[in-house]
Amino acid sequence: MITPDSPIHMKLWEEDRKVRYLRLLVDLTRQLIAQGQMSGDDARASVRLIRRVALTFFPDKAETFDMIYAPRFQRLLDEVYGPPSDPK
Image (cartoon, rainbow, N blue to C red; front, side, top):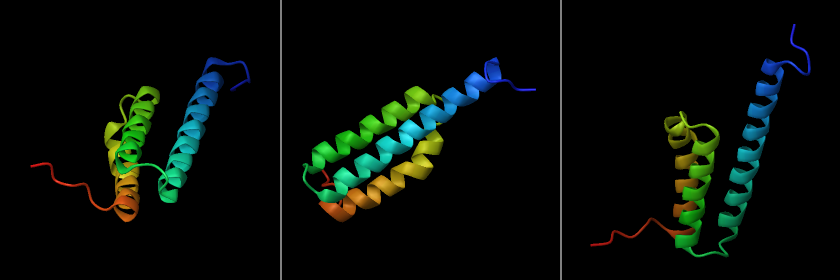
């Protein structure tokens, strides 16, 4: 039986807290990008920061972030700021 003070309960609670916090950061960042009030460079830097936070919380989930969140952010960035320029 899992009790409120059991280690498994605490671990599940902590993971749920991290997931909710990450979801909040992603949603807020997407809203800020959609408003278009920051530069494209700042918007892309924000996405990189969100990825670092996600990997701090879930170090073994880089591939998951790249499959789920990265394409969503990229579509939004392209929509608001256009595709990134090719520095040649």
